[in-house]
Length: 411
Image 1 (cartoon, helix red, strand yellow):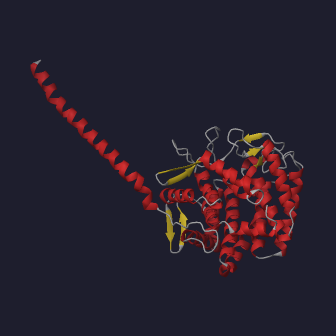
Image 2 (image 1 turned 60 degrees about the vertical axis):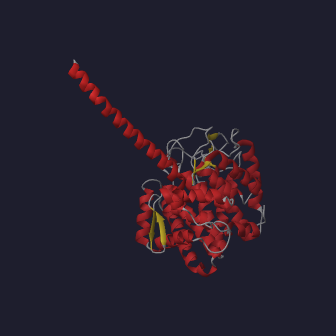
Image 3 (image 1 turned 90 degrees about the vertical axis):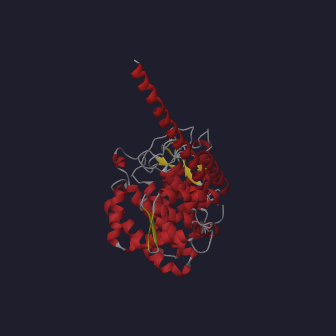
């Protein structure tokens, strides 16, 4: 007994010593974290003028532009890149085209000396997109569930496809007039307007009996492009009526934010969604700037976050439980950060001049998205073509929307 007791006493100080050492290590890590975490963002600090309302793009914007131009000038590289995206989501292929054309149009208006190269790539994107739609149909750019049931309005058309093709056509024509593109734009605008007018909430379907707020506001933005080209206000008039219907039927009562999807007759399907709201708010600048700013401010409050110099955005407000899906991307536990919402929040911050939030978001991009620089070009390893094109559009945003407002009658 005596020997065993002595042995036990001899072991206890060793165990206590190990605990003390572990405690010291843990305390040291906590102190290090307290010192270094607030400084971590300094290593990913962004240019103070990442988004400029006019003039040349920032260095980051120019590098993103260089990569996108070179990608579309190399057919094999472009085809391989788009095929990888389509393996996950055919919509990414389509939306990547839209963001790229919008970004190229804004870049061309910023730097007229580079206009010829930008126009050539815009034409390549537009003509290939029209050819694919003509040969393979609208479903080529849509997710498989589009085949699951019939559209309410017949013959079937998707406002997602019509609206974004119209945006591409209008953006290209606003940089340099092209009659064939303008005729195609006018035909799509007339079709979209007719379909929207037949809905109780002035909305057309993107998928069968499924209307998306961002698709309808993108369609309205395309109509404002047609207004600008023809000196009319028909798109603005429909936009104001659409907004009145949306205020009455499509606003979430808890947050005051527009919902993301609903049926043809206005029954809400999904509540406010970050990967839609930032797009919606920026499009509504062409319809009602005051309401657009209110939506951005609400989205910033409900979805936006920043901490220790890093910024991110949630996909859903805390008052609405939504799914993790292909739009949201992976949701980061605890903070609720969504890749989709955070990426498109950069466009919102740029469009509404929210420089502090923009800076915090870009700091997170440099920290978490793994930038790859090849000569004068920039892309992100954790992104893809649609993500990089959306970032280019965000950093180039401004001149195209200004031209629309000035030429088509300011809201």
